[in-house]
Image 1: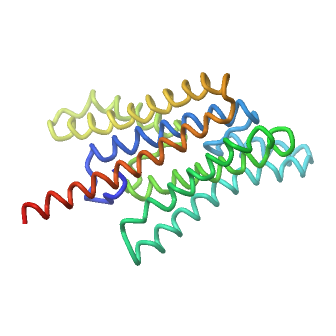
Image 2: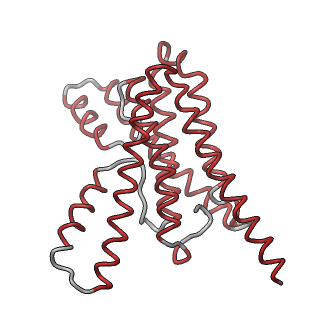
Length: 240
C-alpha cells in the first residue's frame, strides 16, 4: 500500500492508500471546520479570502489567511524533504516518518484542541493544514501523482472528463484504463465523504477527540503494511 512506488504500484495499491488517506482527510476536513470554521484540508478558498482581506486593507487578517496557505505548503515541502533524505539510506522508512508525524499532529490537536479553540484557534488550523500538506505530498509522490486525497475539486473535474470519455473510447484497453481510473476517483470521493460523515457524527459527542480516530487509522495502516511486508519476506525465505 505505502511501500510501492512508481511503476511497482498497481490499482489495488492505489485503492488501498486512497481509501485510507481520503477517509482520514474527510474526518479532518469536517472536524477542523466545525471546530474553528476554517478549511483545514485544502487552501483553494483561503486564496480568495486572502485577496479579499488585502483589498479591504485588513492586512493582519490577510496575513492569517496567507499563513493558512503557507502551512499547507510547508507540510508538502517537509514531506518531500523527508522522502528524499530518507530514500538515500532506507526505502522502508520513506512513508513511515511522514505518517508518524501526521499522526502525532492529529493526536496532539485531539488532546489539546479544546483548550486551543478558546485561546488560539488558528494554531489548530495551522497544524491541520500542515498535516494535510504532509499527507497530500506523500501520497502524490508514492502514487506518481495518481492519487490525491485532501480535496475533491480536481477529482470531480477528472471524473467528469473520464465519464464523458466513455462515450468516445471504444477500444478495450482504453475502456479498461478508464474504468480503473473512474473506480479510483469514486473510491477517494466515497471514503472522503464517509470520513466527513463520521467526523461530523462523532464531533457532536467527543469534539476534537475525533481526530484521535483519524490518527489511529493512520497507525493501523502502517502497522498493517509492515506486517504484510514481514509475512511476504517470511514466505520468500521458506520457498528459498
